[in-house]
Length: 97
Length: 139
Image (cartoon, rainbow over the protein chains, first blue to last red):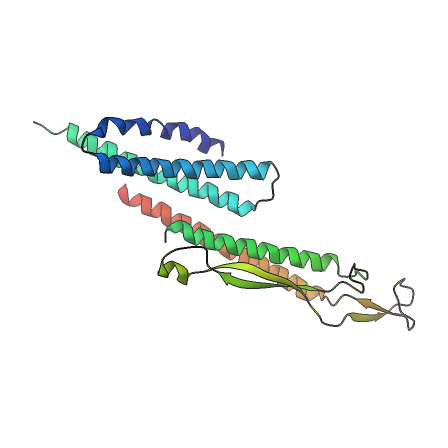
């Protein structure tokens, strides 16, 4: 649980990365924004679930675990998307003019 | 219908099986209870499940359903009469009305609930494994 919350700040610097691509890339930018927002939402949800469990509010244990899994998978998906993004960026940078 | 929906369905099953285990523990705890607020011995509780849509939108999504506890019903079978004149709740003939609970049935119910829980946890693990495998496509 600690590791997941530590990873969240790393996902944040990615959000400003979309700002420079303002011209023309509106569609992709919106998509990226939505994806990051979705990942953030699952992380917050998972944090809230853990909080509720630890503060003793009646909540099913398995729902907390599933919320954590959901956050984990969403984060991994986002990391993969970032990898692809960086990969294509580097591919273009390597292009000889 | 994404990969998380199968997790939600299994989650509803986990909740259902857990309430079934609660009912079993209630029955086992009260296996010799002779006094209840309603009067008479404790009655065995049975849990009744019903399928429940999970609020999905599409036609395909409505075809798959989760499960929820419809009701927890008191079993109306007659109580067991045991001859025990020394019991404080024995009647004039010396018979005590004990709850209509069979220890063996409850143990079997408990194992069944536990196994169903395991099975649904396996479904969730499998769904997670599928999602992670899908992420490996890009590698």
